Length: 155
Image 1 (cartoon, rainbow, N blue to C red):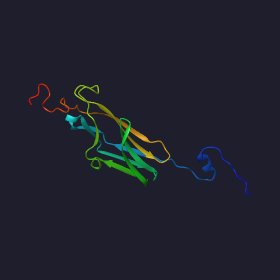
Image 2: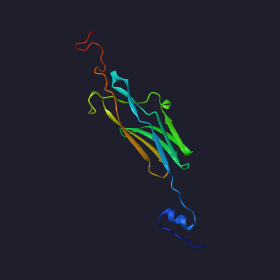
Image 3: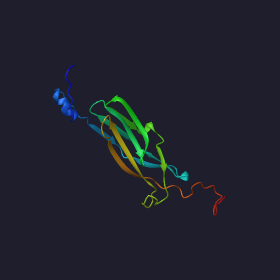
Image 4: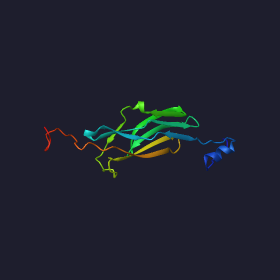
């Protein structure tokens, strides 16, 4: 039976013993500023949009990009043995639906709620890079679900 050697230590040290070096993967993430538009103000609905997102890795270990709003993942673009991926607004033309909020609800006069938009890029076996933006939405209509029969209405 051949002798066995157990190496305890970092992988790069073990690879150096065999004259092989491990290279780290570089990853870049480019994001246009996310923005919020009113889609149905009478129902307190707005949409968050991002014009473009692109991620590029130095090797083919790029696995995905994710868009999260207020901590909830809302969009995932996956890859398989790729070194780049992208997302543009035409892929989700109606945007990602959120609550608008009433005027001042997010703390700013003349605006509605503020939503945290996190955009992450992942490579296999590594921590993601993350870009976070706070997006302020316009306020919802003052007449949510108004049917014209409420007190003071013309109907």
